[in-house]
Length: 186
Image (cartoon, rainbow, N blue to C red):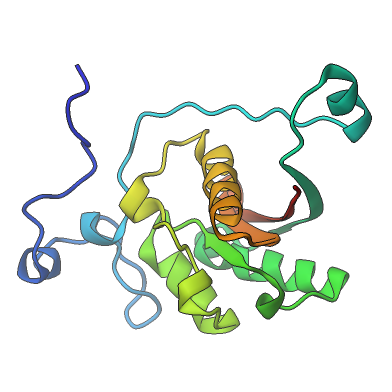
């Protein structure tokens, strides 16, 4: 029976988080240690999205909530997988002429806090528009469903706030990352 959110760490405190042992350690002084406290939890989840051409959606009488505007995929050395969203973001911004300030909401999946922190350090988004409903550490990271979860969270936020453009990025297996720009319609 599902009777509570299993991802909430009710006994968390700064002292307990600081005392957690590393789950993965990098070379000294190159990156922060990855611990259970700065990583997303493994969550159950399933997601689906219906993506169709405008003609098909209209013919079937389906609501058209958003359109996909731009995409970018990039890769880094698999050992440096945490920085791949930065490379994918630079590629997307260069190709489109957009800037971080053009987006009403931005999502950077934080499988590990270091990913979102490195991305934030380079791109300096407005904190009020960056992961505005919480990232994967707060919400969870259901592998195989996170991309659609992020898109749904982003679109729901744009609809609730009247925003138009949303940006999302996340790591993928093998040192890759992707970016997607959506435009809320209606």
